[in-house]
Image (cartoon, rainbow, N blue to C red; front, side, top):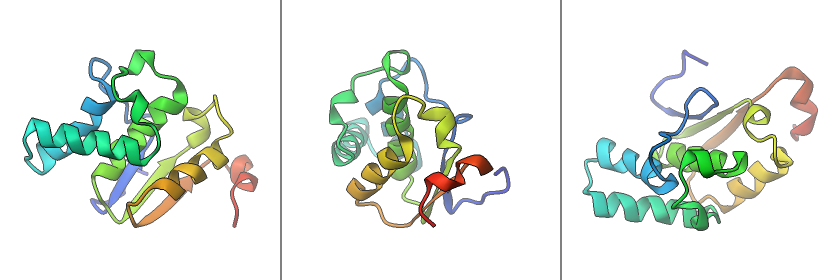
Length: 132
């Protein structure tokens, strides 16, 4: 996984949220620093991303107050905000232990209007959970 290039956005356990920021603020960091947008526009885009994923209600939560699924949605929104052609979700079972995660990820992918390829890398014993 370490050899992935800049065309890939990742959602992974080792890419944590900033605990002192809300979900919306964690996501807003991407347009703020990568596209040099102002704070108001970055915040608007972050809220729109959460709304688009069907989780706009978690915008004000900080990491310690989130469930694992809410944390994953925030990490996913942050990765999608990068607008890269490939999204890699690394070992979702390690992050999504509170929901049936293949179905949860499928629902999020169906709601996402961001194009590109979504790939899931998981433990070998979990491969049967994903359609081939």
